[in-house]
Amino acid sequence: MKGPEYSVIELLDRLVSFDTTSHKSNVALIRFVEDYLLQHGVVSQLVPNADGSKVSLYATIGPENVAGVALSGHTDVVPVVGQQWTSDPFMLTERDGKLYGRGTTDMKGFLACMLAAVPDYVNRKLQVPIHLAFSYDEEIGCLGVRPMIAEFGKRLTMPRMVFVGEPTLMTVVDCHKGPVRWHVTIKGRAAHSSMAPLGVNTITVAGKLLGEIARIEAELKEAPQDARFDPPYATMQVTKITGGTATNIVPVQCTMDFDIRALPGVDIPAIDRRIRAFAADVCLPDMKRVAPEAAIDIAIANQVPPFAAGEHSEAVALALRLAEQNETHAVSYATEAGLFQTGGSPSVVVGPGDIAQAHTADEWIAIEQLEKCSAFLTRLGEWAEHGSAVR
Ligand SMILES: [Zn+2]
Image (cartoon, rainbow, N blue to C red; front, top):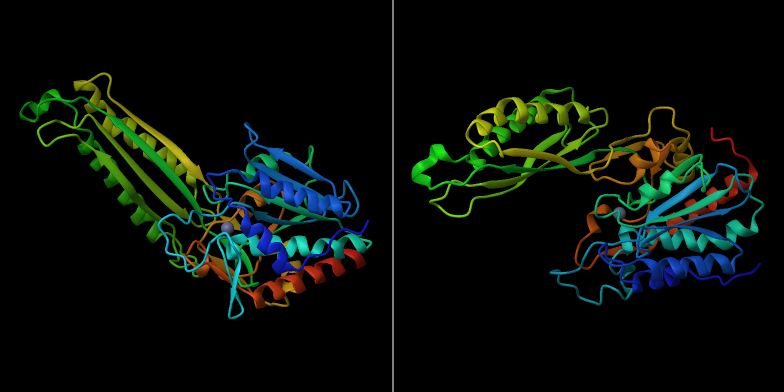
């Protein structure tokens, strides 16, 4: 089947024109991708969310039911609200070899390169299939990719490896930190501040918890470091705290958010247990003595696993070969790679553009980066056609 052939820039122009800010639907973009693939004879499998407003797409070029190389990217972008843009963020604009638009770097540029490679992949007799994976809600905690990964080995073929095309300037990233966010709600009892013993002051309780968090933070800093990361240890801190209603009332409620940026190997369940135990054993008994209804609710609001490909990763070896690089890098931002890896598919991060431009006003990607990525994807097609040995 001979479908339309568009350049990377034409495809990026289309992708940018869909406003897929995370809180909006990505269905129109996914329909466009589905149609485009179908015109090339490639059938997509969709994984919609509960109300159908967001959809992931998974498609395979080449032999079916064979584990291949998945190219993966998220379709959502961060908001432009409050940012000063020189040109319309949802209209691709070229100036001096740079393409401006929301998502050009993070990460519709990679998606455009993926789609532009489709006619070439379809024309080849691929021995190893190439899967295309499009997710949603990455920017709000890597949420949309999880139901898709849950279908791997069931409705969807489990990839042999996954290339996540987040911006790395086409270098090969084999590890990143993983953010974990907690939300704490402390309920006490209000009283006139002159009658403090009748109340349970939730801000005082938050202070105790904060102390324990600071102790864990210090321990993480003292733990064995990993020089590949900046900073070279797991960070932990309280990021938000809200409590109290008036200066003369014992505060009845206080909420607190804290996060860890974990290095691969940090024992998150152990830290979670320690904080819960501190709340239950140190804070709660005193609170309950005054007010039996007092409570401390601790919940993990979001967790993205850290990513470490490991020393003998086939995905890393292949990515290095295709990217014509000989060393790997570590980054501090999180991607879907850790989730793919935990889901059973060895992963690696390699994609066009610079993370420094991601999420900014006047986000741009250099055309030269897209060309590098397309060359990488062409080499992937050659490899997938002529044999599957990696080393
Ligand atoms: Zn991204």
